[in-house]
Length: 225
Image (spheres, rainbow, N blue to C red):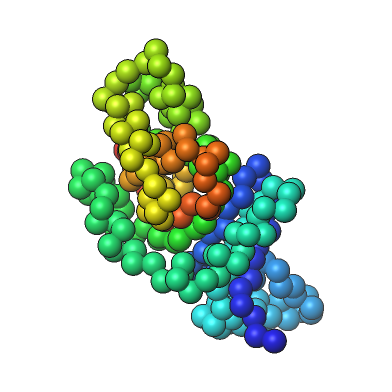
């Protein structure tokens, strides 16, 4: 039976499946191999690397973050679907605010991911003066959603969030939310209002959410996160 996909398992407090790109996919496969002859360590390491490279060229490698409950199984089937993997990365990235896009490193690696609502609630909104001013420095989607749902608060961001929430339909959840990952933190750089509005509607929706995640190159910083 042919291999459909390989998943690297990670226990977490959220459910997320993320496609790995080079060199992360090769690292995962290599880490699960072992050297049998210590006297031939150098030779075996080279052989393992070559085999891992060949394997990753023919198979999709994913990183699965999961909670100890059954719902993450639904992520697996949807993630390996061909329609999900055929991502028009350039088309999605062109939707990002030009001011944000020009600050991003050209060497960033973008990979698609599928996540549940518990992953979205731990994401941060973009670091921007207007967001900090209106929400007292709070940047978690969950925190801002709680403020936005309060009738005692009003701001331009909240007005837009509520407008999107009112007009949101099932197909709106098909839109990709673009994130940057750094040191285990995920920051939304496109789709802040959409993500918060979707989170406010979460009890009515059962779909998993689509994310395009960018990994910053080593020693690179982005002023927006």
